[in-house]
Length: 107
Image (tube, rainbow, N blue to C red; front, side, top):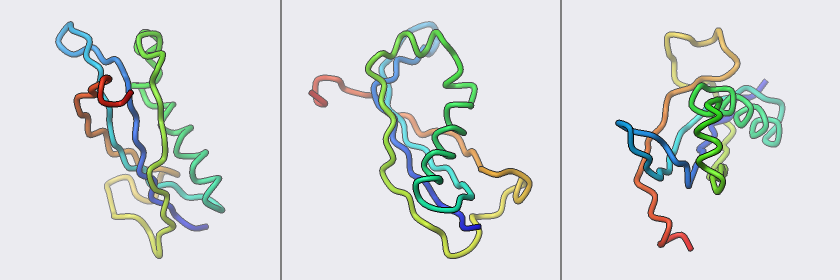
C-alpha cells in the first residue's frame, strides 16, 4: 500500500500559553499509508483530530473560526523517513510549527 506525505495548515486556533490566550496558526506534516489520495487525507485528518491538542474541548470552544486545510498531499516513491516507531504505526506524528495568526490580515 502506498505512503503519502500530507502538509497540513491550521489557522485561527485560540491557544492558551502561560495563562494567556493567543490566536495561532500551525503547519504540520503527517505520513500515512493509504490506498489513494482521498483516503490519505481522511486518515491524516482523523489521526490529527485524535491527538491530545485537538481533544481539548475548551480549546475547540475558544476557536469557533478554526480551520484545517491540506496544503499538499504527495504520494511517496518509497517509505517515509525512518523513526523509532517505523513501521509499527499506520501514521507518524511529528508535532506542530506554530505562528502568530494576525486575524486582520486574513480578512
